[in-house]
Amino acid sequence: MKKSVMSIAFLVANVMLLLSACSSESSLLPSTTSSLPTTNTTTSSTGTSGSSSTTTTTANAITTLEIFKKVYGATEVYIEGNYAIIKANGLPDHKSPYYKDTQWATAKYEAYNGTNTKFALNPNRIVSQSYVFKIPINPAKASNSSATPAGPIGISLNGVPFYNQYAAMNAPLTNEVNGFDQYKGHPQQQGQYHYHVEPTYLTDQKGKDALLGFLLDGFPVYGPLEKGKTITNSDLDGYHGHSHATTEYPNGIYHYHITDADPYINGNGFYGTAGTVSK
Image (cartoon, rainbow, N blue to C red; front, side, top):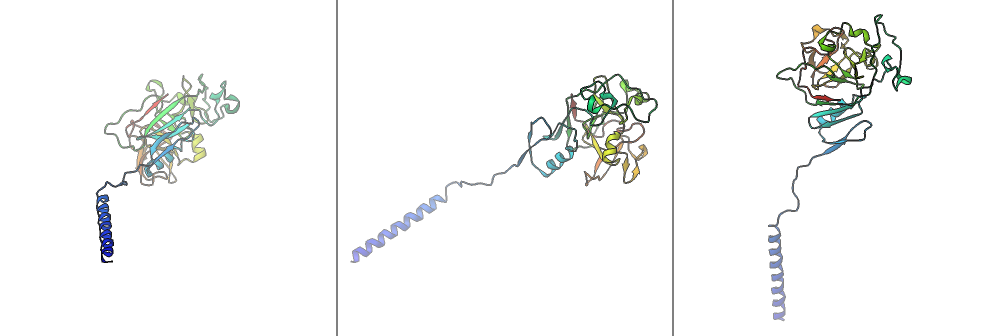
């Protein structure tokens, strides 16, 4: 009997020793879980082309995307790195005498009915474009300002480009204004419809104090009214803007204002570093 009890005790002791050894060995094995950095991504696009892009989801990126999506005339809007990509065909969503003899004439042609008694229809007609605007989403003042080019310097909410204060060959707009339609736009020789001055269709629809678009440097463009006051050139700096909070940018941002006198939209070049536009 004593031998039997001792055998059992010896067996139990060995089992306990074996379990202890296994436990110690498992503690030396590498863990199967670790604290890995995670990146949330989102596929974001708007428009009709069906393509999309994958971007890092941050509060800033989401907010920025929503702001640039205010360009309702775009065919596609997405964030790519540090840029907003805005694609547009440049067709105004309002009627115009410059839709005459185009494929959109039935729905969009309207004879001039503005107030300029000197109006003269120029020979150009509106043509659909393939604009790709690449605009910085974190705009900052440029160390060296660059002049605005001939052609698009920004994009308005309805997808129509903004042009600077000059006609061809940097001539003043003195004569060219007589070709502006009732919504203050016109097409150039390749059919690119554009605004040099206040896009009155947009200010009628959105309000004269509203966000109207963006220049290529990423800074927003607002209408000629601010807090109930009509803005004049004397209220603005040499680039035709100033800084403070706006509805879309409650923490404050530099922004341009459109006024009723030359230079209208932008002054002595871009305040920030311009992105690009291809067509």
